[in-house]
Length: 328
Ligand SMILES: NC(=O)c1ccc[n+]([C@@H]2O[C@H](COP(=O)([O-])OP(=O)(O)OC[C@H]3O[C@@H](n4cnc5c(N)ncnc54)[C@H](OP(=O)(O)O)[C@@H]3O)[C@@H](O)[C@H]2O)c1
Image (tube, rainbow, N blue to C red):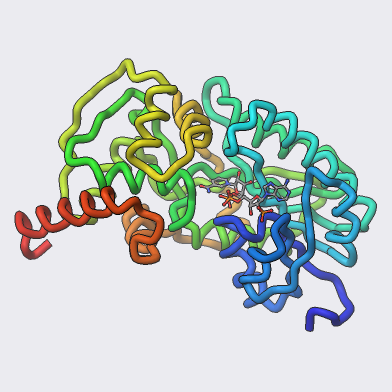
C-alpha cells in the first residue's frame, strides 16, 4: 500500500503527542498516510510509511511533500531551551508554506494555540505567528486553536497531572487562577481528521474550546478528586514565573524551559471562545473534563518515566486516600 500511487496525507510531528494519535485516526478513515519526522527510528514505530521531514532543513521538504494533498503541521520548537525558538518557528512555517506550494499541496491543517485576552506570552505569540504565516501562504491553511489538550503524553496535561497527584499540600501561585478551556484528545483528533474534508474557500482559523471553563486550581482539584483526594491549598501569590518553573521541574517531569513557557502563558485567561468549528463538523457533544482526565490517567503506561521517589509519593497518597475513603 505504501508504494501505491495517489495522493497522500502527510503528518508532520508524527512522533509527537498529537501526531501519534492522529495517524491511526486518519488511517481508519481510509487515508493514505505518511509520517514525517526528523527521527526515522521513532517514526517507524507506528507501522506507517515515513519520510524524513525537518522543517529547519528545507531541502528535506520537497521529498517529504511529494504526492501529498493534505499536510498536517503539528510541529513546535519549544523546549530544548533555545532562546531563538520564535525565529526558528517563523522560519519553519515559512519554509513549509513555500515547499507545500511547490509540491502542489491542496491544504495545510495546523494545530496552534488560542489568542489570550491580554498580551500573549512568547510561546503563544509564536504559535499565532506560525498560523499567520501559514494562512498568508499560497496553499489554503486551516488553523485550529486549542488550549490544554487532555491526554496522556501532553506536556501541559502532564504538568497539572503531576502536581495534582504528588503534592499533599498545593502551592497556589496566582497563575493557577487563570482560566482555560481544556479539550479532550479524542475531540481534537476528531477535529483534525474532519479538517481535511471541510469545504474551505480560503485560509481560515477556528477555536477548539473544550466544554468547560476551568481555572488551573479547579483543574488540579478535579484531578485529585478523581483519585479520592482533596488538595489543601497554600496561596503564594508572589511566586515568579522563574521560581514557578523551578518548582514545576522539581515536582513534575517537565523540562525547565518548557515549564517556564507554559507558566508565562498562564499569566492571564486563555479562553478559546468560538464554538463554530464543532457545529461545522457535526460534533454535538464534547467529552467532559473529568472523563477526559479519567481516560488520560487510565492510559498511563504504568508509571513509566516517573522518578522512583515520586512514584512512591503518589502511591502513598493514593493509599492514604483509599484508607480515608474506602468506597471511593
Ligand atoms: N499538547 C497540547 O496540549 C497542545 C495544545 C494546543 C496546541 N498544541 C499544538 O499541537 C501541535 C503538536 O504538539 P504536541 O503536543 O504533539 O507536541 P510534541 O509532543 O512536543 O511533538 C512535537 C513534534 O514536533 C516535531 N518537530 C520538532 N521540531 C521539528 C522540526 N524542526 N522539523 C520537523 N518536526 C519537528 C517532533 O518530531 P521529531 O522529533 O520526530 O522530528 C515532534 O513530533 C503543536 O503545533 C502544538 O502547538 C498542542
